[in-house]
Each structure stands twice: as C-alpha cells, then as structure tokens.
Image (cartoon, rainbow, N blue to C red; front, side, top):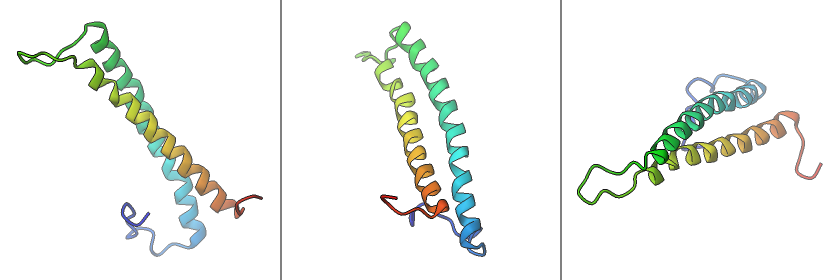
Length: 98
C-alpha cells in the first residue's frame, strides 16, 4: 500500500475511520471497471465482427489487442474484490483461520 496511498487526507483520521474509507473505495473501482468491461467488450466485439486491422501495409488484426481492454478490466475488478475482502476482514477484526 505504500506506493499507491496518499495519506494527506487520511493522516488525521482514526484507524476505524481509515478502515471505513478502505471499505468504500473499492466501490468506486467497481463502478469504473464495470463500465470499462462493458464498453470495452462492445468495442472489442464490434472490432471482431468487422475483422478490424491496423491501418498499415502489413495490416495485422487489431481485434485481438482490443480484447485486452475488457480482460484487463476484469482482472482489475478481481483485484478490487480481493482488496474488499481484506478490508472486511480487517474491519471485523477477524484473524486468519477464524
């Protein structure tokens, strides 16, 4: 968490308040990644249907690369689920194996 956290806003908060913020932030991530998955899938599917290619003389297929957008968004969504589960465990005070 050290390389992605900005503690300027949360440094004055109690541990419980920080935990509540940690529980709420994945919701913003989920909203963004769901939009990216849906719109990315629409873009990739349309590209696949028309067999889009890169506008060069070689003209390699472009739809394979566009499929990486919804796949990457899905993986980011899974990471958010993982972070949410960890935040819930910390918030409830449960230890591993309980």
